[in-house]
Length: 118
Length: 114
Image (tube, rainbow over all chains, first blue to last red; front, side, top):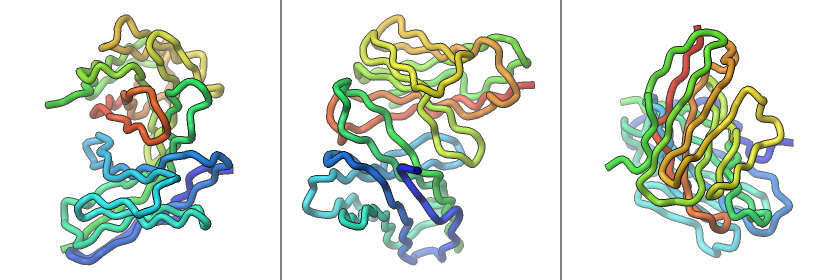
């Protein structure tokens, strides 16, 4: 079973509108972290926002906020007032509590290709 | 200033000819990761180093090897590249820690196999 599911392969949004990118996850670990990354066409993974499984409040970073619904195992990214420069691939990722190594890598979803139209 | 640097940005190699991709970091992180990202797919973890300890993912082909001569550098060696190995290869680093530990990525090396 997929650990991270992003159901929107592509989205077109008008500039200045808010956009929500969906992410659901699957884990039996009570301690985990959820991340969103932006990947422009240049290829670099740019960290946007993080939500810990024990965090009581939804994470916010500037125009980015994370709508965390733990019971539903969803962690949707909300971008307010979208800009042309927001056009990119967006990946949701999870790291589960380390199994003793302290170094587990990220498991990524398949991504959403967001295109902002003027 | 770039903190995780991958060289080269673009690499073209011949089918079956060994190739090495390079990653360096100025963050002094003790964990370094290599991910493979094929076109329109999610990045997939190949392996990671925790200090000098090498940790291979179960489904990483034997064709892929890695070396970490010191804290700052890590190399990905592909012994006999096939056409299916064409991909973006992403290096990342992090401190060892809990699930909230941020990973810092390089700009990636886009590998073409001809």
